[in-house]
Length: 429
Image 1 (cartoon, rainbow, N blue to C red):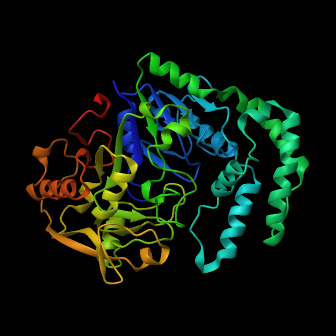
Image 2 (image 1 turned 90 degrees about the vertical axis):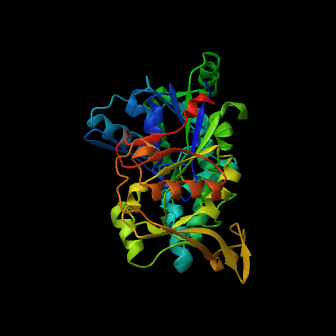
Image 3 (image 1 turned 180 degrees about the horizontal axis):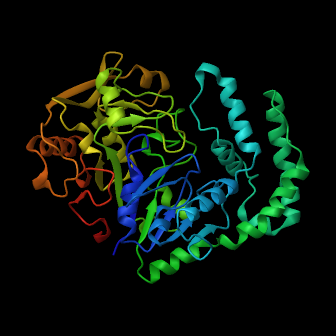
């Protein structure tokens, strides 16, 4: 049986949590391979709602969860989340949650620098969550990160903190923000060591053993392709590679282990934070989509910007992300709308394009080219087969398949995990 990787095919918040939860029931291991606690997945299980930011969604289903080295880890956020789900009745500990020993840590100085920079940008702010994700990734590529394995070496910690503070305090000083002292940080890390180290291991060995044993692995992405630091709407992106290819590097497996790649997309489009959004709606329809879809960020609580489905952008995400099939979520939000529109391309300074340009000004200038489709009067909510869908809803899904050049493998018609139309088993390869 093949493994499965799940990534967002828009700007995040596509409903990956429900899909991962649905697939986790058939997986043996669920792996987070990038991002930090700036991304959230909401899982509804019976009458209980779990809001996860760092924990792999599989822990809700009693599966082994792994936080890979491609993640930047805030220990306080991790243990706060563990305490929260334990209070909801979940059993989470080193027996079912493992953390790659080479995972970089987010320290208090990282969010401090993140917020100071964002404040200095003024009206040109990127819209970060201010949680230190970007500065932590900068330290990783700058080769000055403190990693989980360093907690076992007090002398290494002390030397690394000297280098880290030399870099960060100079930046904070220049931004007019308070600097950090070494001893409180060192004391906090030494106190953290006996709590975090029991979770640490060489997870690449665990995953290699799973491969040999024929176990199913689900790679759980955060954010989405159009927030990828290389391929997204730069600079209004996250600080990591969100494409499925990064599952290999971010978990410690070969690229042939990734398996089937599912791209998650809403039946419309949303975005949190700043950046271009060609199909955004500023009218009553946009407001209606937000209200029906309960469009608020899981982590930030910020209202999401809403608009029509952007097939040109999703097609771009499919090609870049290596997506084998789409999972289309929240189809029921479109119920009863007399008319639907799909963005099929853009006009940039008078020139028609079928892709978003790379340049920042060109992206901002992109005007959507819409194709109009008839809506449907019936309800799709709770449908579990194509036969239960109105004819016009089926036409809408088929047209999306044609435009994005990828099959829709699953449809979600409500927040309930069982209200899912599965057209193909992703684990079948």
